Length: 293
Length: 302
Image 1 (tube, rainbow over the protein chains, first blue to last red):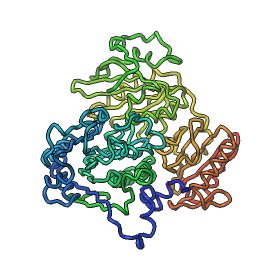
Image 2 (cartoon, one colour):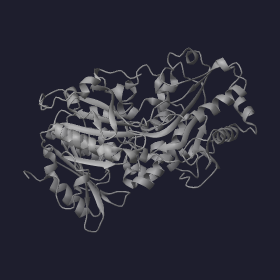
Image 3 (cartoon, chains in turn green, purple):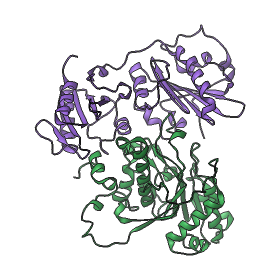
Image 4 (cartoon, rainbow over the protein chains, first blue to last red):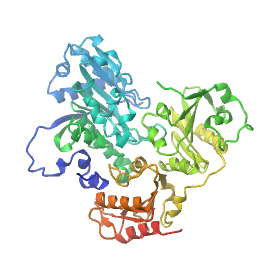
């Protein structure tokens, strides 16, 4: 039986303990294994002076990230590595009123999916009704796009949690700090279909307060996208960002958001991706001021 | 899509029947008619809504457990809008008892006192206070600075409706007074609130539940160092002893016979149990301080 993860583990190994123990052990002697690539792309012009999203810049950011992710020099060719013309593509967005997936991100994804040859009627966008939406029911490919924020139970809402709308019962995933969220990626409607994960860090929320766990005070203009093929690796990077910001703004005592164990368990219990930072290659593109991670 | 357990017609919300209702044991919907129909330039907007323990999920996406972990009964939601379309949302939560209302308030204090009810705080976009068995929040969507005066005026109008005052949880009396940062003390029951206040473990190593009562407090030593104290009251002494063993095993595996160890934060942690109580100290500046604080927390009949 393994010991439970504690605050001391975090302090001892920063985020390593929560995200997989191997990074802390024998790094020099561990065999070389391919790492899971995650791309962080930032641009100071992603938001304008009024914090409105800059669509052309965000399109460019997405393009650069996906090109780097799949090793292509052209954005359309890059997306052709993710979706085929015959695919039915469901873009799982997030419509949470306080911090939804920006329309600029949705448009950028949709545009490139169409550019890759998918028919317009075979591309859909949805959140709350994905379980019954006919397009999502017959989807052969999913693209997962949502903002990053803290969550009172799960610690962090990222790409893993974004699929909770595929669950028959959302409440069934709430116990034990939403430990079972990784299982969502094993549902028949989902399994093996996710082609891209876009964690929007344009305006992340690093702390939650109030009845809806949202306060504008704890949102900042980071102007980034965290993009990867592996939702667990993407969320693992996102968690590092949230923790870094919390340490900076709230102090070391509140660095750790409440129990983000579902990210580790998505790896170790459900095997849907890689949580261990030592097994993740984080590629940073663009603007590096206050990058934090 | 949001569903409501109950809608209160707007015409009732605008009616003034201040003499009609004593709120001491009434339903939260009965507050509606007593609420101001207008606050400065903001007018009541739409119907009031009421959610109970089974429907709270319809109102909150992911936040309901925070309230359900207390004795939450129901919440009345009243919205106000100004000419620009910005919105104030008034939530009045019946938490079942003054202790539970204080607990709900206490777990998330970060802003300056606002002088309302039995305890309050205001920061941009968010007013929170409690009185009697009610916990209240006013949130703003839109221009938070513009809404400040209306938010505070609304709070001043609502607080008198929620009386009488109620008693604080008796567990607060267990906290040693020296160095206590009183405005940072939290009262709660469950692991979810401990984790949000101060992450200890991903597992429930103290076996907290709806049957346990907890106070979490911050202390400042004369040196300026800060440390933390958690006191848990269990239903039975055997549960407190078991929790102390569990904590020692999971969090302080290298602790000495007194249940004390130095941790990676460079501070000292300690755990002790006495009767139904458990005391755990975090980040004390010395072993003596950790031992002293734990012992004081468990001393009988204060």
